Image (cartoon, rainbow, N blue to C red; front, side, top):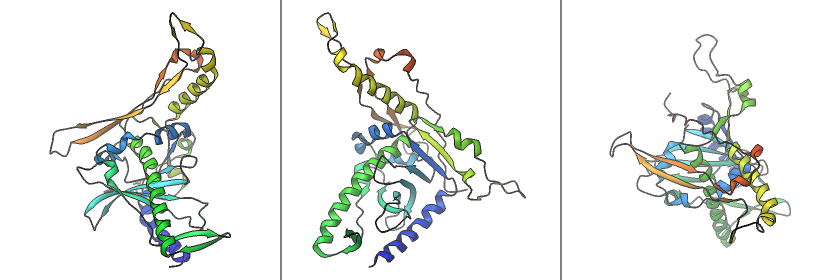
Length: 306
């Protein structure tokens, strides 16, 4: 198996992903500080995997530069004909790939089967052939070295998948802070046929819908970070009676989920909410730096059927 073959396979894999994404062209861009905080959350792995069925579109793209070692990730809901079960697959890409593969490569996939947790849904993804860099050249890895490489790659991919999961979970959250990018909205137009006036894909930049995620929460995190750094030494010496006043600090955010709808009905679904970090001693923040978080309404989940 050659590097050229791997490139060709990556391109073949990318076709159905891009074909699905181009129907809606949804791009999500996370505030970096908020995304880093979000990816450190561990408890979501024990939630029922049904929560991921709330992905608002059959395929979305998440910008991940600065969050993980990928420039971006396509998240697509698909159906596995072998297991006859829906899956959620992550296809990542980077322009720094040593093989020169710019097409999206599958990182991991999750089985969307009822009755299992998010952690149990992760399907180990191991390439049949691994490559490594030797003296600046790509080399095929085989034998025992390949087995060791497989193990390392599988573990790295699983850790990457867990971080991507946190971003996807937030997009699925009912109270997610998601707003349309104002710059893109100025040029965005719904593609329509000039003859019929009906929707028509023309693959133009104006068709792309960019969404900013967690911008206000990220700003508040940065404000509190500056206050905590600047006020630690000063506030630690401030006393009120017999107790010292703690400096401004942040109590970690977490996930909360519950079932909505009657059992054994189509309306029943798992709802997830992100409980934002609690800022302790927030009154120490200057009034002019206070940030109010407005939650956008949840988008209706799109079906692949048009």
